Amino acid sequence: MSSAVHDSNKFGVCTDILLFYVRSEEAGFNPQYNKDSPEYQDYIRERFTMVDETGRRFQATSLVNPAYRPNLIYEYKGYKPPPNGWMITKEKWSNGIVRVVSIFQETKPEGFAGKATRMN
Image (cartoon, rainbow, N blue to C red):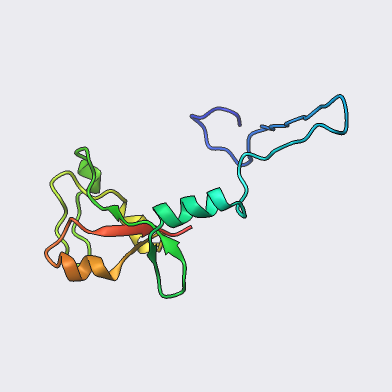
């Protein structure tokens, strides 16, 4: 079915195609991002400043939701929720999508101003 109101049992039919035409073979195509470029590596080093025990870089972020979200107010592993609720759902905590960094527990044993990282 194609309606958003009904359940569906297949993916929608959507395709993006990028065509690149040039008049001569001397024209070049410069990709916008390249993981091996020095600029990209600098970006990663500047923004993902923390490194876990396996060498994987990550970025610490607040667990506090900036806006009031009643569905995100719950106690998690003894930590009381902040007044606006957590930034993430309880399901993401339990599925391992978000991992709490150990410094969070050591620096804020009473609760909610900790740091976390998304696991891709």
